[in-house]
Image (cartoon, rainbow, N blue to C red; front, side, top):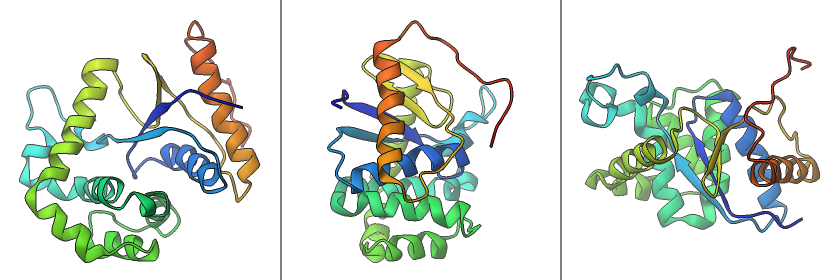
Length: 201
């Protein structure tokens, strides 16, 4: 099935973002030739009170952005390793209970994905990654009223999606799941809310 290009937000802290992004990664690693833009989005910033100091301007909150910033460097400078690093960072947080505010944890995830962690952290020094996280987050909020992760963006339509299961190594399931989500957004923009009253997982 051909699906349109889409974007999707992420913050490594969110288990639902983990679920959705694992489906995307599994399908793409198995050959799905999708045009996907991965957009960092700060959940810390969503909890800043109105008039409060934005997370990217608050030195006390700088570590909250560390994994997002590292992912942006990998996405933009080492794109061939991004999917592996993306999955590894989610795994470090949710499978290994690691603290992604800890440089050692982030380094470990990057190295496990075959990324030169020293090169990534050197690239973080100039602050460009922080600016990119801010730009991505503020554009999503300002242009499309995005409020969380994972939000799928297809054209001008932005939809917050909660997938309850992980692909568990099933690339065919992963591909079918994401194609269904994107097609639903693209083909049925009138469907504003669809939510089960009970959780079956």
